[in-house]
Amino acid sequence: MSALTRYESIDDFFPEFFRRLARPMDIDTSLPADIRLDVNENDKEYLVSAEVPGAKKDDIRVEIDGNIVTISTQMRKDVQDKRADGGRTLVRETWRGQSSRTISLAQDVDDKAAVAKLEDGVLHLTLPKRAGTASRLIAIQ
Image 1 (cartoon, rainbow, N blue to C red):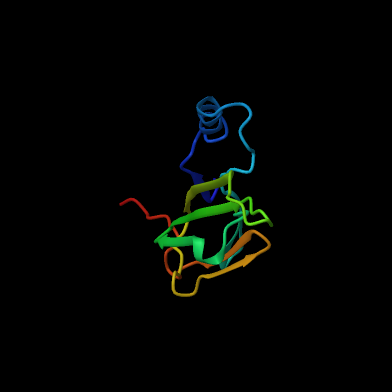
Image 2 (image 1 turned 30 degrees about the vertical axis):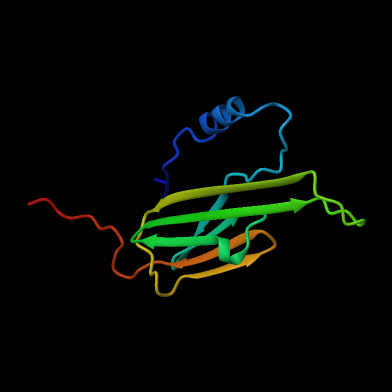
């Protein structure tokens, strides 16, 4: 049995399908993307790598509640066309976005010992398993 349960059971099809219907075909493709995850496990911890391109350290929030881990980002990018001759700006493009992913792990996470590092647009989480929360088989009397 897998130690990872996805909340977005059909996430690969429907959100992107409806997102494309809601926006024109010629829109900029630099909009914030969904958070993509890799989750690995060993005896002591879960190792999560999450792609958060364009997000800064202050824009990322990681929340741990038992065995539920939520990663969310809020991004804002402002681009202005500045003229050297002191003229006014005629074009201003901005985009903002929020992304969030929630995963359920097989064991509770020790939130006090969890570590998060951001390197080159990839968030690396080291989530130690909480001792004593492993599942066990109970004999039926």
